[in-house]
Length: 219
Image 1 (tube, helix red, strand yellow):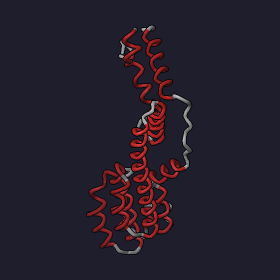
Image 2 (tube, rainbow, N blue to C red; image 1 turned 180 degrees about the vertical axis):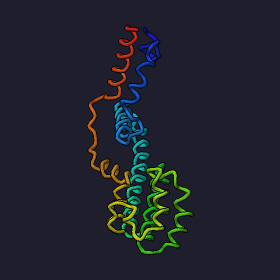
Image 3 (cartoon, one colour; image 1 turned 30 degrees about the vertical axis):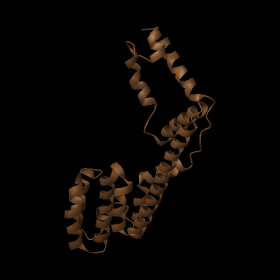
Image 4 (cartoon, rainbow, N blue to C red; image 1 turned 45 degrees about the vertical axis):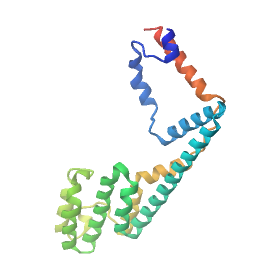
């Protein structure tokens, strides 16, 4: 009992609750990371570690500056898509899209391809299909889409294969809407800061210790 309270030592059966706890809190979420940082800063301030507080705040400001730069790059990507500046889109996408980079490139190359077909540039479209889209075939949303894109070269219009195609301008707007990172950016920008109760970190640790003690008594 003593070791469990003092050191949070795991007891028999404790690991059974770990999957549920880990699924309840996403530690990679920006909001959760921000809350944890606030807890740490509050604790350091309460304990009189003024220089440590300043150091953490300075590092957080650097991180904030990086995030602001990231927002600016995303806005440039959106503008470049609407303007059809595909070289600029491709250059910026590697900096802002992260794990979604290949999937995003597929969407970009697909848009370019459809616009080439719409403009009657079939030879250019075929070259683009084989050099750009084919290597990213696995990123297509369905197994049949790439086949449909290939078949499109034999059609007279994009509408014969792509349902709802209303022209390049509308399709570009739809492509912007697919950028999930932009939607996440807009939602996090409106998130207000959290006002923490006094000594929040210490009380959370006390609650965790009390839970472990109570939980161990029922094993």
